[in-house]
Image 1 (cartoon, rainbow, N blue to C red):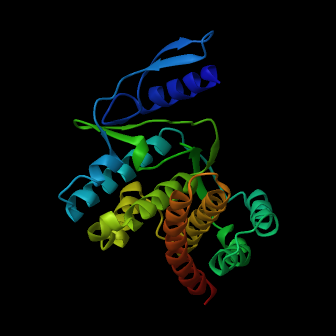
Image 2: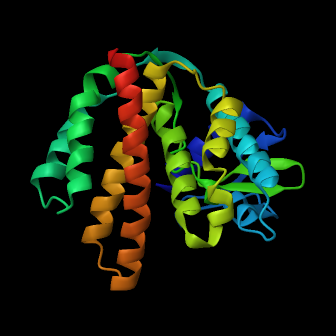
Length: 263
């Protein structure tokens, strides 16, 4: 495992270079101890910066802009031929969500039904492909001076890039659903727009539906995992509330996109 992680990080570091948008440099591989030593990044995560008081919509936009630019640089360092969503595998997982210990909630069932209904259109567009971060979220971007550094980079798999965009947008939505950040939540749509614009996401509604499809799939998987987790009841209820709130808002947006494409 350590050898694979070291090799993946080394490839990404070489491809992205040591500019403003980068990953930590892998320094030493201790194969026998299954350890790797990487460059120390002195700074705060993007999530920590978002949570700093006083809250500022302008600062939140700046941070989401940097996140979009970093992801663009990461995917741009490994451009692959475009492809479509891998829907056969994902639809099998959707059916499993509905049939194996389903979440007893009407919204969950409605979201599952939507994924099945929208799959054909979501699978039509040819999407950019690259290596995939695997866990792209505000916690995994470090701000160090002028540098923006992606951490916990897997890059072991290659797929359509919307998986990384969906991961970040979902985690951002969950973050903003917290009562602590109600002032920033007012700007949530603007923050999503800034992130996607700075990434360079195609504004085509078909591409937007593909992204929303993946986001909804990821949220349902998160919701189901939260229901099954053995964490304390208050934490489980809190996470369920955040995921359910995000799922409801996203389902409404995705239905609107699907209707616009069906006209």
